[in-house]
Structures are given as structure tokens and as C-alpha cells.
Length: 287
Length: 322
View (cartoon, one colour):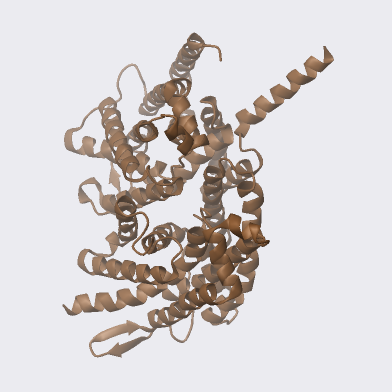
């Protein structure tokens, strides 16, 4: 029973972290409808950039925040390119867009392998390697830090989307692009900004990724399952749903981990995703 | 379009005869070892194109079907020691069933969900095999090759001829689909699924058929892997690089005609072999990724499309000249 309680608490922490690595995709895929299969690859890219900055003495979280403007520009450039080459030309944009992002996944993966090798990389910080002991329970500090940051990030983005003018514009463009155009706004510029924000958030989430555990170049493959599972479970585009879905995934994973062993963990997210697509593709919290 | 049925079959017969003659005369086994991989990709690319190229549903799970084929073969060898032909047939049957199942689950949804589901299937199956002791688990399994059958003098050559035969079957099936009503239906789905449904095209049935056939061919291509490497492990049998290659080859070659995947597979497969041998296997994945992105952005119709355009231009020029 204690083991199960441990699993649930750890799953809660892990779940908020999963929500944080997925919010970028909630915006990019859920709201903007971009088939962004390369999202996890950007996440790992963010983790490696954090690792590089950490070697020069930056705290990983500070490094993640420093990365955000760079990733913002990167995301805006990627969307612009995607829009000019695929969305604007229409017709089979879906097929080609997917193939394009799948190609980008492998370019980033191999790029990282060629630059940094296939070894696992870790960061150093005061809170890594220690743990909080509460009664019999041991909570690794790195998890608690990642949890807190993840919560701040997810709630911050949710507030940005619902309270600010630009945030509401992003939601509006997701709802009805034509109406927005008729009102004299430029949907492409809003989407470009939104995709930039999504990528910037992913950069910071990458810093959390390397705080939680060691990172290697092909790690994005498992995270394809985790991020898409969270976004689909949440019901494309719902921010509060993303947080809830992340926690569901986190707790399921830690329970499976405790009961069946670590080798089954990668299948949990993909299994949940498949079940969800089969029975309720609009997600738990979708309309 | 003119019916040129005989030309295709004569061409296939010539290809098969050349493969047999090569196997009988060339002594260096390495050529067959390398050519086998290229031919295997002709099968995978052709199979991918049946659903991806004609119907526009992007399958990221080629490696799932490929790995299933390889492990069905491993299972049959370990349990009953069945011969290669039966391994391939059994793999095709299971691959077809898997394709049907995945299709049933996700082909009603938008295309991207199908794509993500295929990635999911890959990782789930890989995890299952890792946890399955009977077929070796994560460490993989060593396979003892049986003595080679007459008239071949080496097992690699036999596998090579077998792969050529499989490729001819795959291309013939793809070509049949392309020129028949099934192909027309699939193209209608790609261009506008709603309109196709409204005009009476049985879209779900056609997509399911395409997914089943495509899956069966991919698994059939994976079955000889066990014998070819005499060693199978989940991390390499289910590696996503098979998925990206099988997707890149038709797109580079051209997805609208059956010759596209063949051209793409032979070109890219050969480049991959050369790069792997001369530089590194990481770089060969980079080459695939970069070429895929370049073609998807700059030449979406692929090499076949570029060729057609060039021919059209020349014709027009000649007409003006006359």
C-alpha cells in the first residue's frame, strides 16, 4: 500500500512535468492544427542547449529562461516556413507537412548525435541528487523543482491565453480563422506568434527535461507518445485539460512502473493514446 | 492511358533472370549482402506508397510491420523450424491482420491521428517484444541458418533472389491497385475525402484494404531479416529509421506512379549503403532526413514528377518548333 501511495505522489509530480512538456504541443497542434510531430525533438534540443549553458555555470532553470527568446524566434521562423511552403499552397498540405516534420525529427536527432555523441548527458545544480524526506516517503528534490516550475509554466501559459488580448486572439484564430480575417486581423501573424510562444515554452520545458533525468539524442521518440497522449487525452487545445491529462499519464506510468517494472513504462503513454483514439478521439475534456 | 500489361511482365521476367544470373556468376558475396538491403527497401517503399502515396495517409509505423515480420519468423524458427517461404507467408498474414486492426481503430479519424497511432503501435510492439523472453527479450536472439537449398551456393544469394521475387510481387500488386478502380478510389480519397464519400466511393473499405495490403507486404519484407542477419534484436528490428526511409523513398521518387517508390528506393538505398560503408550509419539517417525535407519542400512530385515536367516542356518546345 505504501508503495502504491509513493507511486501516486511521484506520479503527481511527474504528471505536472508531463503537462509542461506538452503545453507547447497543445498550442501548436491543438489550437493551430499544425501536425507538429517534431515537438519532442525541439524539447530534446532545448535540453541539450540547457546542458551546454550549464557547462558555463548557468543554473538549468536560468538557462531555460535564457533559451526562451531564442526558441521564440526559432518557432516563428519554423512556422513562417511551414506556412509559406505548405499551408498557403493548400491541397495535400497535411501529408507533406507531416512528412516534413518527420524529416526534421531525424535531422535534429542526428545533428545532436554528430555534435554531442550518443552518451547520456546530465546537468549539475544544488537541488539535483538530494531528496526531501517526509515520514517514510523520499521525494527527489529535482522532481519537486521540476514540478513547481512545470506548474508555473502551465498555469502561466493558460493565463496568458485566457486573460491577455493576444492570448485571446490566438484562441480566436483557432476557433474561426475566416471570421478573424473579416474583422481585419491578420491570422497568419497571430499564428506565427502563437507558434513562437509554443516553441519558447518548449525550450524551457527542455530545461526541465534534463533536470528530471539524463538526456540522450533519441529520447524524443518516447516523448512523441507522452506529449501526444497528453494533448489527445486533454481534448485538443484545452489548457486545464492538459494539466489533468498530464497527471493521469504520470500516475498511470508510476503505477505500471511499480507493479510491472521499468521495461513496460514506454508502452503506457502509447497504449493510453491508442485506447483514447479508439474510444473517444475528442479527448476527456474536449467538446 | 494505354494498357501495356505485357511490357511490365516481360520487364519483371528480365529483372528476375538478371538476378538469377548474377547470383550464379558473381563470386563476391558482399554485393548480394548490400543489394539485399536495397531490394528490401523497394518492397517497403512500394508497400508504404499503396496507402501513403495513393490515399494520402502517412504511415510512420513501417518499422512496426517490419519488426513484426522479423519476429514472426523468429518465432516460427524457434517453435517449429519452418522453412523461409512459410515464414514469409505467415508474416504477411499477421502483418495484414495488424494493418487491418490499426486501420479499423484510426482510419475513421483525421490523417494525423492515423500517423501517430502507427508510431504508438511501433513502440508498444517493441516494448512487448523486449519483455518477451521466448524470442530473446531486449538482448536479442541468435538464429542458426539451416543448410542452403539447391541450386544456390550461399544463403545470402538465396535471400537476395527471394527478395527480388518479393519486390516483383509487391510492385505488381501496387501497379494493379494503381490502374484499377481501387486506385481511382484511393486517389479520390486523397484529393477530397468528403467529396469521395458523397459520390459513393466506399472510403473506409478502400482505406482498410490498402492498409491491410500495405501491412502484409511490409511484414513479408521483414521476415527474411532473421535469416539475413542470423541475429535479431528489438531495438534494430523496430527502429524508426525504417519508417523514415520507407516514407522518404516514395516521396523522393514520386508517389503518383508505381515506378516512383522503386526509383526512390534504389537511389536512396544505394546512397545509404555507400554512406554507411564509407562514412557512418548516423550520417546515412541524416542524408535521408535532409533529402526528405528538400523534396517535400522543393519538388513534391518527386523525381518522376520532375521527369514528366521536363518531358512536357520538351514536347511543347518541339511543337512550337514544328
